[in-house]
Length: 467
Image 1 (spheres, rainbow, N blue to C red):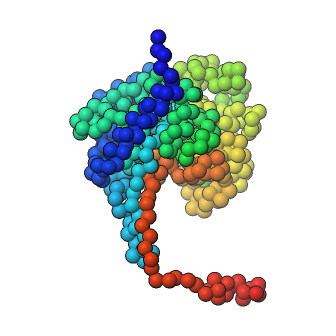
Image 2: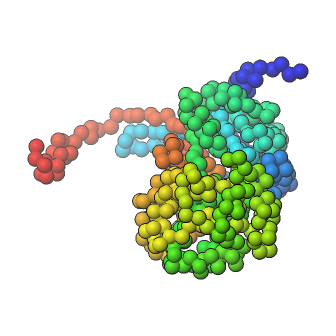
């Protein structure tokens, strides 16, 4: 019988991480931090290991599909390694004679990372690589279903560490199936918390007393306007919506179609595998069971989801996702929220202004601060969206899932954690990336005085308002 105190177990793990991190920092160099990050990256990218991790993730979580997990593990990690390749995270990172300030990179210490079952390999790997790049140790708390994948990943990382003589205590996890008590203790005693996934965990992170980087919920709405390349938009939405069976927080959950091209775009969706269902009750009655998403339908391959929803006779062969017409938005209209499945809610807008209104209402209901998208050839419309919607990202003419978390064809940092700003109750509005895993010490030297006169500051104001 195991009599280990679970709280003491977490405390012992973090204590070992502190010892390892202190030595890592004391003997640190940019080369050492880079090599540790490369070791963790190769642990998940090496093809046979990647394949095993992808298979294990799908087998144990029941979410997503193996080919797309392999792609995600590879591309997310490769993109991250590109992003951090030349990043300075050790020693002097800036020296400005004008201000007299020299900035020195410093690790944060021990990172506590809570990761979801939707990406049980790629998300912890991303956090681990970023942590090591900046000289930290990290302790991962996976979701219960994600434990086997996380264990395998850490085994591969430790095998790479053995080649380099690195301390395995730099990368650890909470063992066993985990518990709220153990995760809570991790939140309380680490130096920085990174939380992706459960909004309950996000709230606990922000109230733990430890600095936290936690991200909001996704519920992506994408506008297709009358100027869009309809065929291209339909292909991008299908590729994005179906990738890894819609496990991503960046997967389209709603498409808002301008009336002038509604029928034409529905036809284009059909060509790419999107089957339109006009009677929403045929979906809602089976997608939700006792108020919860049906586990037989969420994050499943198309044929399994269609069968679970009883739609096999309703949709044509070759259907890859189901599009459901609706008008309602809000708590009484579950189709307006995140569905974690190959279900795309369809709204018809009178015109572009109406599409903006609908999109805003969807985001205010769920997913505020995360991201929205638009397919358009009108240059001014992305700016209109950016100023009208409570969102941190407006993705333009791209497959949303592939664009939001970083792409080789846009400038966003590669990440699996998207900050949602104050709209989503978050401390960051950017993609979580390496700079969040580092802090700096500033050496401040005296410089010639730079004190303005009152007239320099208030001259224009006095001219307009008087003294």
